[in-house]
Image (cartoon, rainbow, N blue to C red; front, side, top):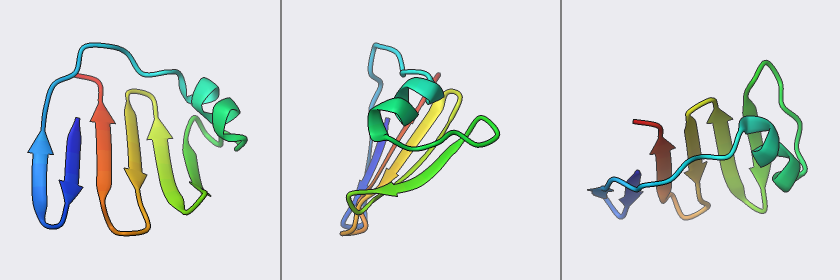
Length: 68
């Protein structure tokens, strides 16, 4: 997991698993196109594909979760 905030970058390893792209889309109420999600929900830009989830918040902070 990588978090970028105010010019600082924090990287850490988390034990767990990501939901599938379809499960994430269902939770957010968005559609999957070509196995990907590209949407803005409540001001958060969300990009997801198999093994990778990226969130970009209105204040510029970013969070990226990738399968190792």
